[in-house]
Image (tube, rainbow, N blue to C red; front, side):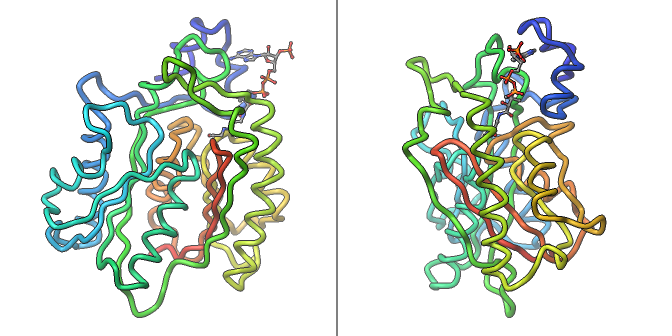
Length: 290
Ligand code: UT7
């Protein structure tokens, strides 16, 4: 859905939306396409790509903030549709930091031996939780899903997580009485541009590498300006591929990092992931792109 469709509803313009956040278009789920279908489709593709049989999956994690479906949690429904009948299944709520939070959880489950293969999905049907006439959010968010498979390996491809939360800022991104997401955009923007470079540097230190060693920088796709500020603060050189998925996908919450990873298929080497958003929550780690 292009900006021209949304702009008239919020007294905005294609030019303003591009300038303030870099978005040219975003995806909207079809009316009959629910969050479970979206998450299952992404998980199936990830399993096929990894060559892992759904029966061999021991945990399904779904990071999401937009579930308003018929069941209380999404993950058991996804596991059922995948045919992962003996898998543990749970949703993980850390909003736009959900993917790196869930990745750290999957990493810990595999390391401890509590799980073998973990399917980890970030999925959002933001259409269900935004107000199409809210000037602060209607143009920003999109629907999407992305997934990865985490499993035992000779060499660990997931670096130490740096994570945290500041609940004193929870009012900045919250649901109203009707369950609609409301955001204090400029305040969240200011918080994000200070927290992302700091958390990113700490994740690089924890992984024992420097920004110059990175092949890719894949922050949560919140706003292209936030990505640019962070890339500049980290001093990323031209050899580092910076994810700009937001231009065509919008801000897809917990799905934005795995979707951006998929868009960079073919890029190999160390990638820095940084999630941030409602909570306020943040998490970062360096991963080795396969
Ligand atoms: O994913 C979870 C975390 N979320 C984020 O990280 C999002 C963080 N926030 C943002 O990305 C930005 O705050 C937005 C993209 C949401 C908004 O951009 P902004 O530059 O912060 O806009 P603003 O709210 O400060 O408004 C600037 C101006 C105002 O006009 P004046 O007072 O300067 O005359 C607004 O009235 O733009 C006006 N404005 C709009 N104009 C056209 C506000 N919303 C719109 C709009 N269309 N939709």
